[in-house]
Image 1 (cartoon, one colour):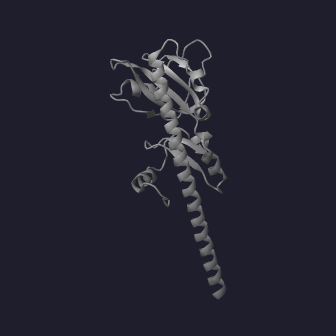
Image 2: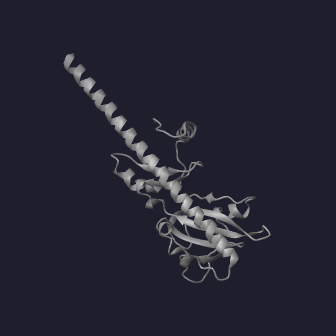
Length: 219
């Protein structure tokens, strides 16, 4: 009885230590990811605002590719950037390979801005870009004329895997990393990349996370 009791106590202590270490690593990773994603979103939104302003001053001659080249952080995190006119046709793109022009009028990230009553950034579910051919998250802002009429959409495609925490998450023993929107759609995942674009299956967990705010959530 004494031997088994000692073993049980030892295993219990080891289990608690393992759980505590896992919570600490996960919390540190989550906080770092949140900070990096926030910084990335700020860089992307600033690029959307600035590029559309310059475009509106000279829509016939503005080329977004050359404009991007000296913006090192933007170049690192953006797959591609472009501006579509009111009809949804891309009129300038950082990945411009010549005609035929690409049209995105049927894409959600365009339609949301075309119907938007106000200027607000929209973040899409993961989609394969029609000009880049890569799976990415679309950040968009509405472009308006001087009279307030809809003139198009500025869009930048974001690759979340440039954020180091997604690689770090894979290195956690038996762990994984996910970026999930408030709509429940998985924006990024490692190592289970097949989950990208799908709904997170555990609605109860999402509700608990939203209710808890920041901090670890036992599941």
